[in-house]
Figure 1 (cartoon, helix red, strand yellow):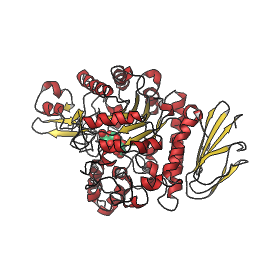
Figure 2: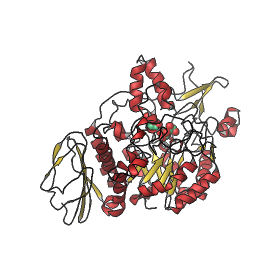
Figure 3: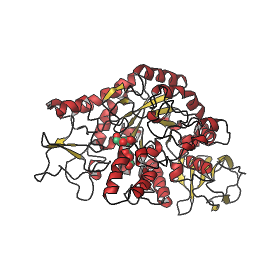
Figure 4: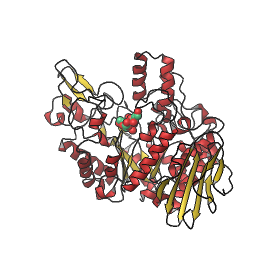
Length: 552
Ligand code: TEU
């Protein structure tokens, strides 16, 4: 698959489509929606984990890498999904959670039972004389990254939930086991792999971080490139058709030059997250802060330019299963809901890289707006609610922060139709259905030529129709601080100009070049071809302009 000309669609199976009536999405549900996905025009499906798991972190706590959790179906259902997707020219990308396992994985159970071989699969350390943890590192989900085992008077490391003990990648036996997992799924016809927090598997020295929570020490660690090259050579690198993407939490730009440069033989591309911190306060996620648009634009432009200079490839996204819905976060749910959803899709899908759209993004799905704590399911959100209220925040103030930042905003069931359960399940959904499924749903949008769905269909088609989208250079156009996100993609004799009014007000934009000779390939308003050097942009207006001939 030519990942530079492809669009990848992320599916959170638990929330996609339930065919068994247990309230959980399942593999047969995905199979039943392949025609819908083929109509949308996507080329590959990234499936979040569906392996055997106690579901503490919705499957990112894996208890058996080789087996389908019965909640999601059977291995025969998976084999059928591979066949049916392949018939439609759609590949499958599986999610490999290799930084940690579930504490119910047999390896960890054996380690706790004292088996020395499996004990070295994990990271056990003695604490300090004063009963302090081995280091001051913090879990990404709140609290210490070390869990004390009184019966052994030692700790084990978990960068995420307590029930997600970190694997010891310094142990070659661990790395060989994980390479076997990848080869197993390759043999079953899988054509892509997403690697969960893979840049945190090389921990370096276990020492206190005097200036922080340890992230600087265990992120992009000392052996990470060596480990990735070894993983590549002993598994997916044996099939040049396989596409890989690394989730690089808290990564550095310089590290990503290497992760995603084909000459390094590590990965095809990387997810980075610095642009998704534009509504954080400094490094703090669990606060209410406005969107810092100039910072968002500057980060995206910097990553686009620098990664291109170093021959490295980006995975492009604004939504995923960990991020609140972007139309609620950076756009508008009000009168300009549709325009802002289309504008945000245009803004990122035509950048240099491979776009990953997240289930429901193509419909303009919004945040869940859960009114009570009992509506939440996410371990990270529930942990942080406790932390916020322990710090003295009122329950209402803490719930306001969860409503804005919780990952559960992205995990409400996919909205297939306008019935009370949105056509997601006949049973009791594991998490609440967004009542706005009455108007925001696939059935309605498939029937409406002006829908977000049909706009995304046309947006996705541009990547296949115009080489300048897949192969063109990137040039920032509006780097200075104004309300427009505009950039150019160029090939000799071709220019694509993408202009997005990021705000909900009219704005007259002065272009850095004459717009004569450009034609409108796509827009979220009825638009005539602009002329001269300025465009009167309407609220959240997006325009894709194209000119063939002398560089504009
Ligand atoms: O996410 C890693 C990660 O850092 C995210 O949890 C996200 O950055 C954080 O929630 C922002 O506050 C991966 C998976 O995508 C996520 O679903 C898992 O919970 C996590 O790893 C542990 O496997």
